[in-house]
Each structure stands twice: as C-alpha cells, then as structure tokens.
Image (cartoon, rainbow, N blue to C red; front, side, top):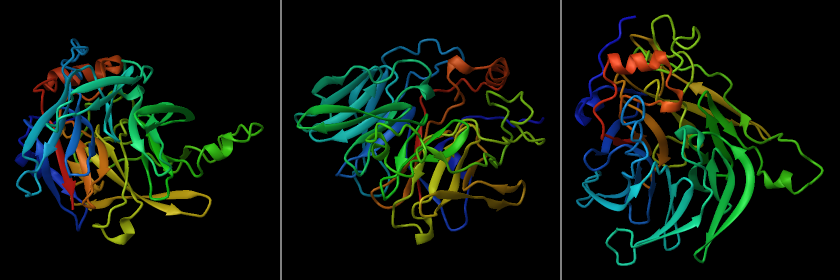
Length: 388
C-alpha cells in the first residue's frame, strides 16, 4: 500500500483538501490559536461559541501525562461580524479530560468526570468566578469514547447524555437526576420532534422511536422495542484517501483493496439538521462524522409512521467512484462532533490531530502507523467549520 504523507496543514491548506456535495461549500469559523483540541461546543444567546478543549488527550502514543490539568473551556466571539471568530476568552481552566458542556439558567454545566460542575460568571467578563459540583458520579476518567458525554437539552426539558443512563434537569440552581435508557457512545442528538439519536463507534445511527418513559411507566413491560433502534444497517464508508492509520487495519474487512476505510470504526457526534438554510429536503437528515475516515456522512431519514429508515447519500467522485458528503485527503481532519448553528447552517468540530485512538485501545498495528508517519505531533491544533 502506498501511503501518502500526512503533514499538519494550515487552515487554508486544509480547506483545499475538502470535497463536498454539489451545491454546498465549507468555510472556516475558528482555528488555532483561538482553540486547541476541541471536542464539544454550544452556542449562547449572543452568538458566542463555548468550546471544550481536551488538551490533555494523547500527548504521545502511550498517553503519558494525560491526567495533567490542562483542559479548558473557552468562549469564542466574532467581534467584527464577518462570520469568523476572532476573540477567545478562557472561561475555565485546570480541567482533566473535560468532555461536555451545557448552558443552563445562570451559568454553565461542565462535565469533567466524575464531576459535573455548575460554573458562573458573576461579573460579565466571560470568566468563571464560581465553580460548584452539582453531581459527583458523571462517568469516570478512562477511555474517552466509553465515558459519559453529551449534555444535550431536548424538547422535553431534560438534558440527555451518551454512554449513559442519566438525564438531568437544572431548575433554580439545583440539578435533578433521573434514570433513562442507556444510549450511545460518543455523541447524542435530537430531531424537531424530540426523538433522540445515538450511535456507536461501529454503527452509524440509532433512534428512539418513542420516548422511553412511555415504556418505563408500565412495570410489567420490560422490552426495549422502539428504543435505540438501528436505523442505518449498512456500515460502509467511502473516503478519498487511504486510511491505514486505524486500530483494526490488520483485519481483512476493515480496509478496501486500495487501502481506504471500508466500514465504520470511529463514528462520532452526529447532528440531525434542523436549520432553514439548506433545501427543505435536508431537514431532519443526519450528518455523521467518521474521523478515522476523515469524512462526514449524510443520511436521509425517512419517517415511516411508527418506524424510521435511512438512505445513505453518497456522491460521485472522479477518482474513487463515490465519496461521502464531506471528505478530506488530509489524514489529520478529525471531525468529532456536528451541530446545528443558530444561523441555520451545519457546523463541524475538528479535533485536528494525527492520533485519534485513545491509549487503552492502541494496537501494535496502529502504534507502528503513528510512529512511522509521525502522527503524534504537532499538538495544540483544532478547527471549526461551517457548511453552507
């Protein structure tokens, strides 16, 4: 297999590496040094973006030093209204592998397992002045993709999490904790009807066809029928570069004969598009990052009454035959979350780094790939993109 080099690209060079579906374009919203190692974000009512930076993630191939308290939450602002963020303020620092954020009345929830912090800016300078633990059992430190994340506020006024069976309400400064259906791995989303969507690293999309509390209220009914249904059974993926730098690359079914990723292995935080800027046929469609393949996939979600089905939309490519909705030739493009923006567009959060796999699961195959091609450096990069 001929493997092209994978140098770190500037944001401008990275933009040139993308191919996107006809009729769409992609533009840069923020990049280093404004943000580093972004893994989650939320908007506030002023159009500012609150970003969780997992700066301690995999500082080297062995993950040595991962527990250093160097994680942060930063607030990005567009002060000149040109569509690009130009100011970054550190709201909260000294965090260890923080991974989720939620904006609530009077402040911000920040997930730093096992702590869920309620942080407040009391003087309006966008810096946390008060930090209180409102829950002390929010997951545990360990494999990133196997620890609670999300803090997604749904239409029922509950805040839901992936890789978790907990949901929260935050009222009058108090956190209410409730049990719910265990869902997903990295990323959770909802549609315009409040249906929850989750996934696993090797499975694109699962959906709750009905709210789980309708089933749980009947103590004599213990079936999970209609909850976390797999609505995207075909796990094929079409990339536009060879992808040997994956954990299971030694298995025959993981890579195609030409070296490209054949099936999902690192599916991440999906978005259900609820904006008004894309053509109407894209509403309620799913956009799902696959960072190992350097792509974002597109699924049309089809409402069949009591069921949901999906159609995986791929696009013609002159070299590879077909490709995903958004694909890059840059191996360091690592889309880990997708979001609806308040402007009606789709946003992609790019961790932008060579190492994607957490240390607990780095195989000898992947370790060799990382070291031979120097994917372990540089660190401290990261981008946010807008798709129009």
